[in-house]
Image 1 (spheres, rainbow, N blue to C red):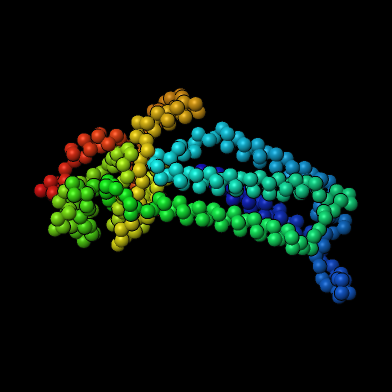
Image 2 (cartoon, rainbow, N blue to C red; image 1 turned 90 degrees about the vertical axis):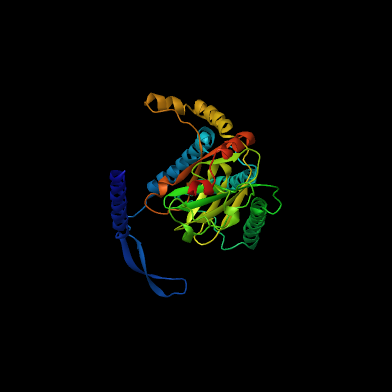
Amino acid sequence: MLALFYIFIAVAFSIGIWQVNKLLRFTKKTITDENNQEVIAFVQSEENPLATEKNNDLNGKFLLAFLIAFYALMAYCLIFLNDIMLPESASVEGENDDNLFLISFVLIGIVQFATQAMLFFFSYKYRGVGDRKALFYADSHKLELIWTTIPTIVLTGLIGYGLYTWNTVMDLSDVDNPIIVELYAKQFIWEARYAGADNTLGRGNVRNIEGINTIGIDMTDENSADDIPVRELHLPKGRKVVFKFRSQDVLHSAYMPHFRAQMNCVPGMVTEFGFTPKFTTEEMRRQEETVRKVAGINKIRKAKGEDPYIFDYLLLCNKICGASHYNMQMKIVVEEEAAFYSWLKKQPTITEVVQ
């Protein structure tokens, strides 16, 4: 990888020298402008021009070929590499994010397709061959009005829908009996605790960290006694889960991509986010297995002597928080509600752990 970087630097340096050499071929010349004033301009040497008609023709054809190749590559990525995209949202609330992404992607795709086509095709059509010249407009108020008004209306609609989506996802005021979970971030590990039978988390503060109490639970708070600290996150399918986020040291970001969930963990404050899991881990594994079977990914891994890929939900850190940032993750298991409560009952409370 380092060798490739050095090659890139060498190529860029060589191109730079080449371009400077081309600029040196300009000659200084005194010309008369429209107001009969003499000015100094840099022009091409007549005996050694920078661009000939042949060059212009060749460059125009290259631009047209690039346009065709570019759209062929784009079609290939959209059709044949679609399996490496994130699968369907694993949370109910994430469906809103996916809809917003799809609408934005389609609109941007239409604009990108049209503008790139015009840019490269016109560069080809009006290349400097013979006496061919492009038609030049000094200004057009009608055109300015059109390309200002349409983007304004479209962007206003997208921003409005984005705000609606954000408010819908972030509104936790009318949640009925949610599962309350705290996610505690520190370099370079995640810890979690569940609110116990009272469904209320006890207070937490870094000043309370001592011995086995690694997330600073306030043991004098009566709500803390039944809190359940864990190192693996389990969530029930179909139940709303409200997460409370804290950070011990620096800014982290709790990122659960398959649930379309992300929230910053800020030292000294509590942030929150909530979603409802839609697929269990086993259900998502079956979906992933089908996709990878079609793509032949596991077949390729086996041919290389590697273990087949096994899907797991993950909690990641999405802020670069230090040297081992890449290793900061926690496994998430989504299961049926009965299995979740069966697992939760087996976990000791903080009171039992400390004693």
